[in-house]
Length: 258
Image (tube, rainbow, N blue to C red; front, side, top):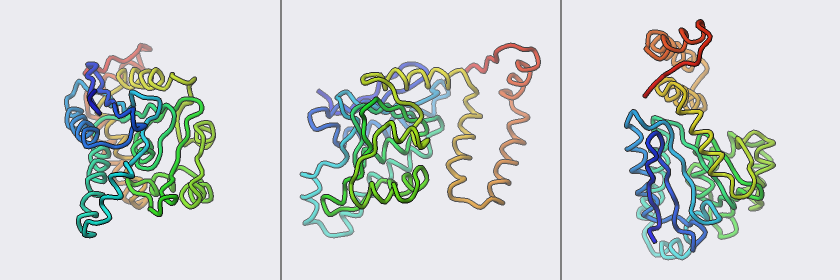
């Protein structure tokens, strides 16, 4: 069985983590599939990308058997290996369409990094988000500290990272860090429903909104105002706005097409 694959559903791509035997641990195949999906998402027909797993656990992060082998590498080479993950996260951030995580079982380590890097997150009841690096004498990577700092109160982020205590999907939802908690086995259906909703909306406007929100964490208020001004000025003259405004005034559903 392949350790990762891309399923093309016409208006969405689904990246399947197939490494169920190792609780969805990261593999080169998964890296390659995610990177390929980010490229394929440039096709105007694609409206969303869903990340999920074939087993009962979203992703357990890095394989410790692989990590222990890296101890003998020079530090610059170890840095390059981490950059392989970080380049993947950069590609996800640059994706032109929203990313949705469908989490069953849980997401740990770099698996949590991948899930929390998505724009919309659906998790099944009982799923846990864990940053257990410290138990192995390691530190978080994959942008996890940045994601936790943005999404959670500082004491809870510290509890996760310093004490390796997991946080349940229910608590993450209560804090607004994930969008929906489903019954066990229902995360994928929830993600598909979100993709359906996105597919009915204006693709270009969604892409701009996604970028504006992401950039807002790293820019000044003044720069963000300028970015919103430029984006709004462009959007107001685009075909999507013409259709959306006309539909609103005519009291009908808009048809944004592809």
